[in-house]
Length: 381
Ligand SMILES: Cc1cc2nc3c(=O)[nH]c(=O)nc-3n(C[C@H](O)[C@H](O)[C@H](O)COP(=O)(O)OP(=O)(O)OC[C@H]3O[C@@H](n4cnc5c(N)ncnc54)[C@H](O)[C@@H]3O)c2cc1C
Image 1 (cartoon, helix red, strand yellow):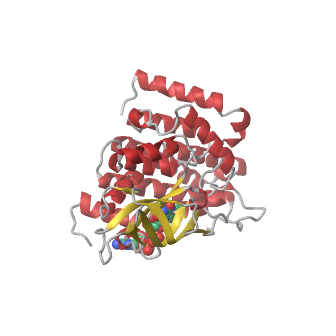
Image 2 (image 1 turned 90 degrees about the vertical axis):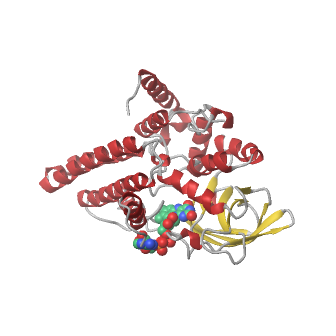
Image 3 (image 1 turned 30 degrees about the vertical axis):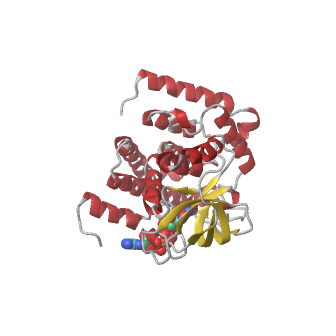
């Protein structure tokens, strides 16, 4: 990938805007809401997100006719790099902006575009992803949540789990079985379900970081209008897989800049504590630096391709790198304190949360399976 003079001009524009706007009421938000810290300053981050939206800095890759900027992939990389470099806070609208929005643009009806895209773009409605269930995680086609038409509404019954940010979401995209007796990917539908109704119960799951980023979500005769199905009823598996492809691919843009900040901060910590004099620590810090360069090169090289094996390689590379950084941080800072105790600090939280990186968005083992079959041509296990 080459950055043209126009790209560099775009970079300067993004950088200037962030510098000028991460000030005043937003000045204290730098770095807020990172891994394991999603509970931090939600309302202020929401206000910041809405401020970004008002200036046209949300949904960059969406086509202009749907309210986006129609930004090229290169420009999106630049935006996310500058965003991370500025230490801007983690956005609260990622699920809607980066997962549901592109899926709706590809598969939704004009009426769905009109109803759902503007509030995502303006960050007036937040979304969560209702895929996983107690019996359907890696094996997502095992979804058992049911939905049936009752007049002009779908009625939904079942349970989702590990639903990130469901406690803050206005809507959930739910993968549900709408053809009784169907199996696996057949007979599933992709439904858009409002969260604020008596039939939806959200129960937080306390994580080992001490916070509750994800939840169980129960549907007991929950309802949504019949028109809120994306794609044809029964064709939800195809739509759901398209969302997963987005999740494993472009949505990871620019995060390596955030990783770089973490690594640089950790090197500072090693200097401060004297750990930087330990040859083994120096060696591991240097290896982490090399690993980050490899990830960046691979990410840039992979952009714009829709090869699932490449997306899987990238997921394995970054998730392991981040998990290893958490472990290195423990060596440097000297071990773990109980969440919430006075000694509990940023690095311990990173260590604990980064254990999730090799699980969500498709676990390591599932990525290996994709690489084995798609890249190496091995038979399915
Ligand atoms: C922080 C976090 C946030 C999440 N957010 C969401 C969300 O917002 N919405 C949502 O729907 N889900 C979410 N998930 C769920 C996530 O997608 C699942 O955890 C993941 O798909 C794994 O499913 P599982 O937990 O049921 O584990 P399982 O599928 O039961 O897997 C257990 C273990 O067995 C291994 N395994 C499973 N199948 C195979 C196989 N065929 N070959 C080899 N090994 C295998 C897995 O790799 C894993 O190590 C989140 C998870 C985490 C950790």
